[in-house]
Image 1 (tube, one colour):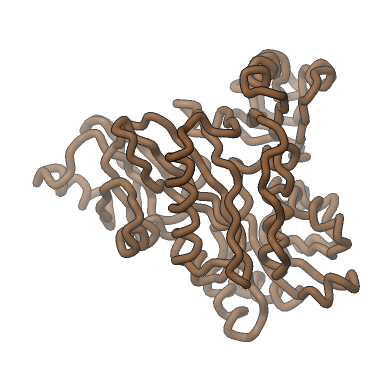
Image 2 (cartoon, rainbow, N blue to C red):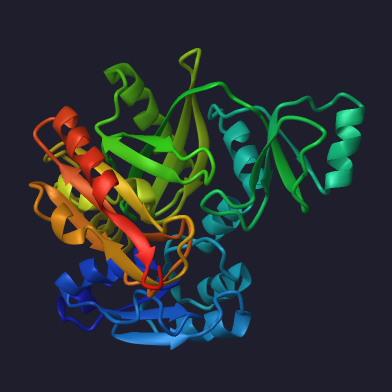
Length: 386
């Protein structure tokens, strides 16, 4: 791959052309990499800047397999992909990174949790059930007690496929599920870790996240996280342990709970660029996107030194607004020093849809938070019809 990169003839295939694919293409363009994107949406965010956009279903075996044969190296920016096609490509000698076997494990939250147990990686207590009827029976038998968190084993994303169940009056999700004891959470943090095929590993600085209670989406995050150096060390070592035990090449976002007793527990992982790493584009020496390219292309990993403290805000569609997008307050937001606005290029907005993000940089976190509060009050994602 390095030889093709040095002659500007490398073809990078990316499954899914959402905002993460778009941002990865922006980074790849700096190295003159040709980018091929597979996405069913004719107007996906990555289409405008990809070398080639293939419109097709990434859950269809034949479509994914044919796409993978057209590129030198295949990667992905989401997990819900036809895994059989990726495995077949690997068996037939095509390069798929991260490895499809890793993705298959991560796709299934039950297998993911069993992996943590096998390797003595701390995580919250859990049990697996095939149906809501099985869960109801377990509740009757007192094997399960309220409150608990139900997660569909496959297909969940951005808060979808997750329910916190407090009582018998609440409706269970349908499908094979993972049930976790509801943890009393003090903080939620994340660390992105990268590993190349030489075994070189680097962690990005820990971030701390706050979530919207209704949408279960990240409302904002800040870096560096407000945790002790001891906790940073523990979390980094756990992130490194996870990626090494997976023997994974690529980029892995590791999300943690810190409970009210101070215990650090691995929650979930994602084998791709992640919302918790958007701030790295401006605030870290090497962005998560460049680091991913370095990792999957077998290049030396870049420095993850923090340049400046930052707060990252997701730009979500406002409640009551659906249709052609209009960004209210954009000009005013851009007058504030250290404010970097990223619009994903989605033409249609709807309530809570991720439409962009804003990174706020400042000399101190306190100053960055003050600016972030101003941004929250003035920059709104609305529809043109309202």
